[in-house]
Amino acid sequence: MNKLLVGASRNFSSSSTRNAIKTITVVGGGLMGSGIAQVAAQAGQNVTIVDIKPELLEKAQKSIQTNLGRIGKKTFKDDAAKVENFVRDSFSRIKTSTQIEDGVKADLIIEAIVEKLDVKQELFNKLDQLVPEHTILATNTSSISVNAIGEGIKRKDRFGGLHFFNPVPVMRLLEVIKGEHTSEQTYQAMMEWGKSIGKTCITCKDTPGFVVNRLLGPYSAEAIRMYERGDASAQDIDTAMKLGAGYPMGPLELADFTGLDTKVAILGVMLEKTGNPVFERIPLLERLVSEGKLGRKSGGGFYEYDEMLKKVE
Image (cartoon, rainbow, N blue to C red; front, side):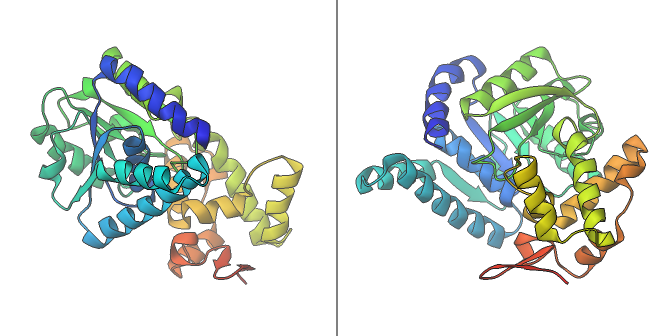
């Protein structure tokens, strides 16, 4: 984490003059949105988080402060004054609003809202009319076509994908997605900005699931089906992949972490776009979602999150 923090500060100072991305707006105050805002603020950039729900903005602010405190303690050890300064300085760069108009004057606007095509299209169509000419628009979609999301906007050359991974402050990867009309200048600006916030950036064309989710989807789906069939317990499946394959988190733990509702949405999109039967619906997964068991964010999914992990019977 120390290397990430130091790298973010160093890269920001060297690359911001090239790509001119110094202010960003994140639309969506959930886990992904707040994480993106945090890493940008850590790197010295001014950030506006926009969400229509004030309670989400309040939750995002508390989460960011807590995370900054943890990073500060790891970075500066027992130097309480430096920890306090780091948290204060980083947090001071973040403001929030429930009005999209308050975030339009930014060099880069990143959408991190619900994974629904029509909702994303509506947002970008509105932003296209409001933002300055130089502004780059980007979607954090994990599975929907970047080209489809930006179909109705005029600035297609200044539009692309920036796919982060959860938790954003910890995960080092950033998938930079080139849409059909994304200009080379926009692509380079997104790549440099990703490096400026301490991320390792890879490039992928607008293909279903991009790189990670195209590979992770079948793996995760088969793990859930194994559990559904009773082949092994959730804990044994996760332990097997952590100790047998060296994964830091098991597939069912990961599903709970990212959200089971998100998993259902991704599988649906991937099945529609690829026709691969590995992405077909999973009754157990849909049942858990229908019961409100969405994973960590709801307090329970494949595991229950109270004082200790417990298997969902």
